[in-house]
Image (tube, rainbow, N blue to C red; front, side):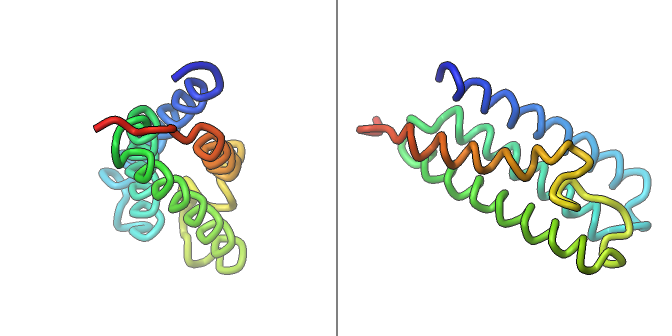
Length: 130
């Protein structure tokens, strides 16, 4: 993986580390204050980890499909949680990674899956080795 693909993987890895760190601290210190919000942050962390791994291994059998599924799930998550956090702010006592479309992360969670899907679409492996 070179060029823009490498940058994409790096950004996904940074988001995976940031979301994992955030959710770990939130769950350990204050889970009882906002269990839904903190659980969603943990889910986002898992999705970013899986997407990073799948993008790195996307030239192997099955991983290209896993990358598509992870990134589509990420996009759906940020759109659904972002919209719900606007319409029903009381539902999310504390912000998640995907709240308000990723406002706390400079809206990177909103833009990143679009780039990820574009990259997957334009870099489909011709023949995926076993």
